[in-house]
Length: 200
Image 1 (cartoon, rainbow, N blue to C red):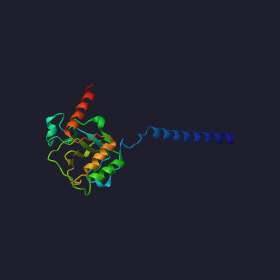
Image 2: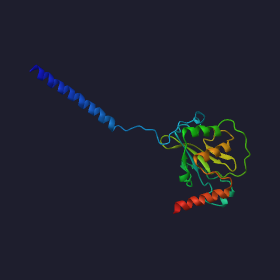
Image 3: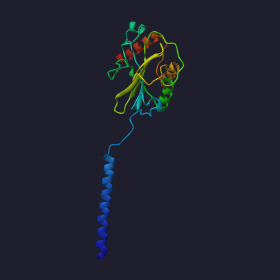
Image 4: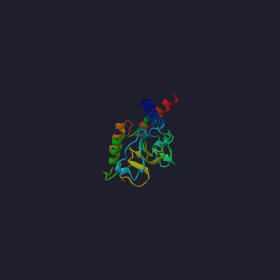
């Protein structure tokens, strides 16, 4: 009799423990998994004050003249890559690339610290941009670059080198698969071809 009572108590205890384990496993399965955001990077220390909170960096190509052939011969001073927190409407989506942590380290080499001066032209026709996003997807910083004229604009306006390494940036853009052209006509052809692809 004593043996059967002890056996019954053991079964009840083990059964309860088993249910508790099942509950714990069920809770773990129901809990949302925490995964890093796609394309998340570790921001280089040299950029932490300028692009505070950035966890993702996207390199883009955009038509600052918005398809206007005449605009290609004039500075695009009134057309910004980011306006009121909104990306330029003529960004070529198929040419956008997310940077890796290693790419961002390389980028920091070209846009911070002492850089050799390079002659700047009077025009300003940027076609390359870098957009820095926070974890919630908001834009915390951006940089637009004209590799033909050797000029740039950024926000925040303070924190980068007064002179960028434009040759280094061109190499980085080519390495990650972005087009780099030296004359406005080549850019005009590129954007027209891109519009044709999207209209078909």
